[in-house]
Length: 305
Ligand code: 13P
Image (tube, rainbow, N blue to C red; front, side, top):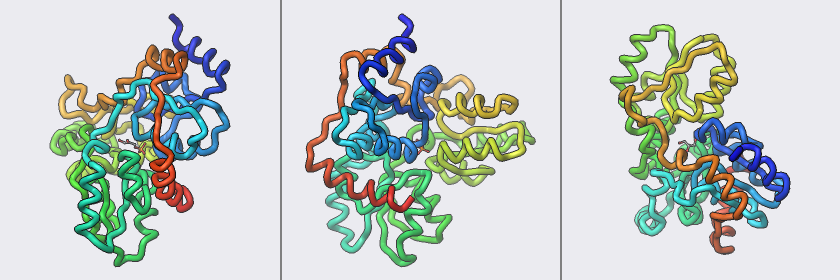
């Protein structure tokens, strides 16, 4: 079956919009109406007038789309496409922690569940995290949830001492700085570009740190011809499209491993996407109370960024 053609047909018939994250497989990125980082996709989810939003990404992203546009049907091709960061923070544990930390503001990275968002004062993405944190007075007590690497990076950049939840992204956290350094030494003209979910040692040797969208923007402005890319492999498709003359090398721990492929992002396939549009399932369902509570910190973020 020509899945790309069938998907295009179903999208038209059903007035559906396909939003895809940069970590999706190239075929899905090509089939999408909009590709973006978490922040851009959340914005698109607010703006869309389509009846159906198909989210080619992971569960928390589709949930965010549903929270922001509850009148639309939101579909996720594989409902088990989770996120190790979201799994690292249980809402019950966060509620207990909040009781132990009276007076703290909770800033949650968007990679968390709707229930965790309900307990948060404001949400941030990697694209706006510094701006969101800097919107608080310097002496504000902040609990940053759930990415300890992004939180530590913000602490270093701002001189703050936010308390950090001990979560991390399994793809970014596992990257080994020694291996990245070896690669950098062997490619003296290449620049290292890294996502802030990477551990501190990798960020230390990076020439540029930013969200997926910021990295894409960087490579189009920067004069270098070669880059070592410390993030998920899906983004290389857009990098190569934007700068076909440049060379991109994945910063992996081992050339034979698939350790830079997010096992959740890569659960989505063209066939699952086709079936999900055809059957209008799996659908993201949230109770109205959760939607109402989770919406407030997300809207607070969108107002600020
Ligand atoms: P971006 O917001 O940079 O797209 O990152 C999303 C994400 O989940 C990274 O692991």
